[in-house]
Length: 97
Image 1: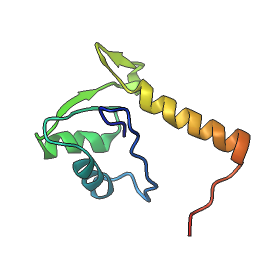
Image 2: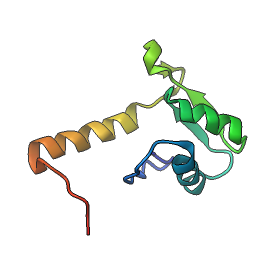
Image 3: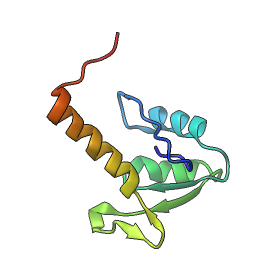
Image 4: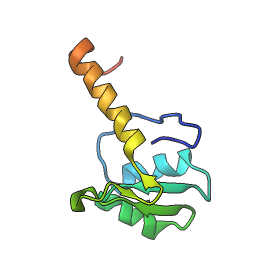
């Protein structure tokens, strides 16, 4: 996740299901935040589960990457740079002890 100040909130998770993601999202965001998400099905459950956040979706699977001012380009750029760093510099990442 990227917060309003541009800080990235990233952590390793074992599953991308609602039981794993919802507590992380609820802890990281304040009520009234705008959640801009891609079309991952679990986010639909988040939208149905809570009205604490304003929800906007960009449907990558339908080739929609920007809707007005809403997009996920910054967080996708973060992941791209991280992956390139691993491939080009570190070559692998292991679990910290």
